[in-house]
Structure formats: C-alpha cells, structure tokens
Length: 195
Image (cartoon, rainbow, N blue to C red; front, top):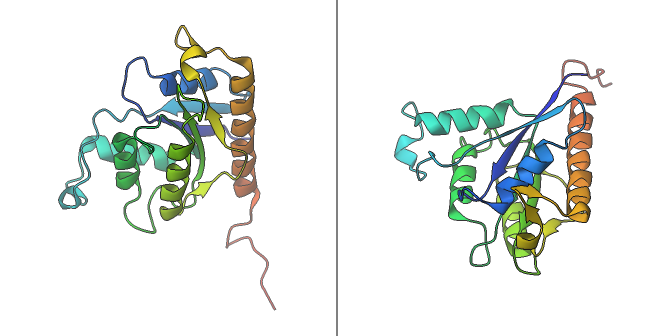
C-alpha cells in the first residue's frame, strides 16, 4: 500500500503553541505507512484577489501545492474570541481557490481544537467545520476532538495527557479510514457501464 501523506496545519503562529505541540505529538505517533508534514502559515500574506492568479505569492503557491499533494489534512486550532484565528481562516481562503476546483475540494479534513478553557475551543471547531463545508472539503464526521485545559496537558512541547492523545489518535484513524475508502472507490474509467 502506498504511503498516506497528511498535511498538518496549526491555527497558531506562536512558537510554543499548544496546537502545534499536539500536531507534533501526533506526527510522532502515527501508524506505519502514514506520514504528516506540518505546513507553516507564517509567510502567507492576507488574501487579496488581485494576487490570486499568475502572480500568486510563492508562500501561497507552496502551501496550496502541499495541500493538493496530501491525502488528507489535520487542522488543530485554538479559539480566539469565540472563533477560529484569522491566520487559519486566511490560509483556508487561499486554499479554497479557485472556487469549486480548489486543492480542498473533496479533500478529507480532520478538525481538532484546544483551549485552556473547559470548552476546548468548541466554538472555533464549529466555525471551522462550517467554513470547510463551503470549500467542499470532506470533513470527517465523528465525535469532536476538543482538548480542554490544554495548558496543563502539554509537557516539553508534547501532548502528555494519555486520554487526549488516545482520542486524537482515534480521530486520525478515522481520517486514514476515509482516505482508504477514497482510494478504493472506482474511478470513472473503471466503473462498469450502465444499461
């Protein structure tokens, strides 16, 4: 079986980001045959339709190419003011172009959020799911991965809480299963003729 390649996207630019720490922990805990590359958002400019064409900024071109080349995406985000961070929304806006034919169309996406609060970023989670629906992504349908009290669950740059890590890995397995279903689905050229 070919290697499954995941793209990990953190909704935080902070060097000591809990969400990036979660992704790094998952990256080191993936099953055999699965790899995850973390995609930085630092260099992506604010979305400007004037630049959305032949003059696409290099950072945006590289980001979109990485999303396109992946078999699935894992987004892990904090919650800012009851919603997703602007940097993540901006990256999604770039990746959603061209409309209805973007790298996100049909792409399996797993959403996770974390927060120091007891809600675990559930409002950002809901907002992300709604936004990704607009991109025609295949958002994984499963119990929400929301990690509450995250400040007490990160140690030495890793997610140290066994229950949270186990639940997040179950979600990763659901994402892998969705990718497997897509790989096994017949393509138009291999479907039997009707009639």
